Length: 282
Image 1 (cartoon, one colour):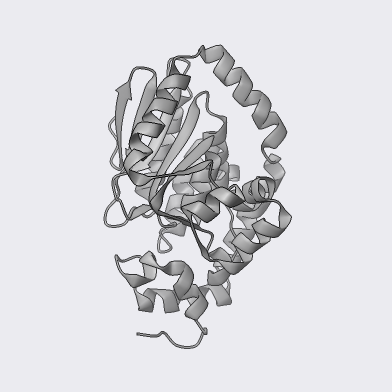
Image 2 (cartoon, rainbow, N blue to C red):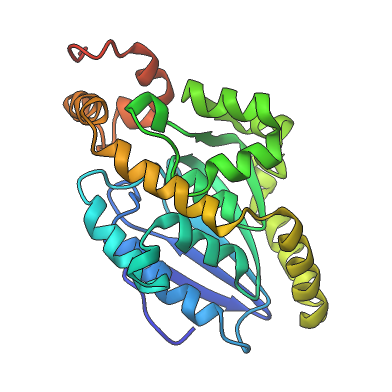
């Protein structure tokens, strides 16, 4: 990689690129992260790019907790750089992630909720720390719906009933349950996760690029949603997130400490179940 990024550090090891997100204080998906991701995906779209990319987080508690809810217009404008104003959404940016000419592997420690989970779902494979990984789609509990791919990917991966459970309950899923449902490839003991993912990435990195990409493209053709469905989910998210219900519940969550390093973000799935929509609890 030749371009320095504000929120992503990169390291090339043979044919494998390791890309680590670091956006303190809690790795929210905001305009800086989206800007860097657009640039990195542009680099990875070049024919000479790495064959395999491993994504992880510098923060052991948060991979991506969710988007920065105070900067939705700003990160949406950055996402437009990837596909143009007509495709200004994280859903379309993550679709580009699914289609880049490299194998993408997510290594999950900490919390990946909302668009953080959707980023992982856009990757080709997902491996998570058994002791320290949490996934969730909190959007319905906030007052909107997932708009960056979770509806499409979870329905395909989990099946209708389990996708409904994941989306409609807005609950947190630990790595063992996520593995059993199909949200991730495997839950791996934390002490073994780094070595496991590095070995898997190095193995694929030694295979012929043409074969890797041809196989990925063939599977994508079967499994990825139509672009119209991606755009429709993004439009519904944008509509509902501006609605009265979402605004009220988001305000209550901010009173409870949303987007700060504390109980609300660490246990968001449980906090959403406590809310009555009228007054915050201490």
